[in-house]
Image (cartoon, rainbow, N blue to C red; front, side, top):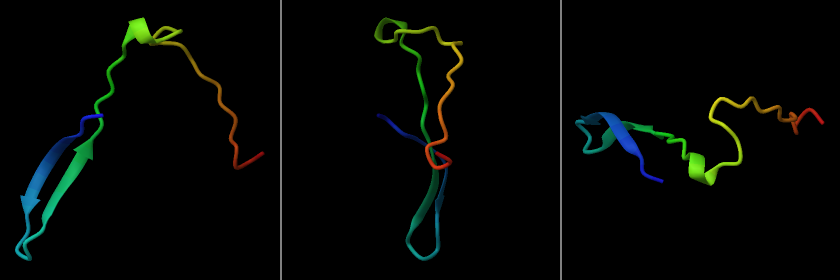
Length: 47
């Protein structure tokens, strides 16, 4: 997994603030379904 960081800010107290972005890339050769398939998942907390 590779993160991209956006809005990098160097703060006065010596810290750095950034917003990580997790880019997702569909790889059809590693998938059993199509990119536009709909998934129905149970809400485990509700069960």
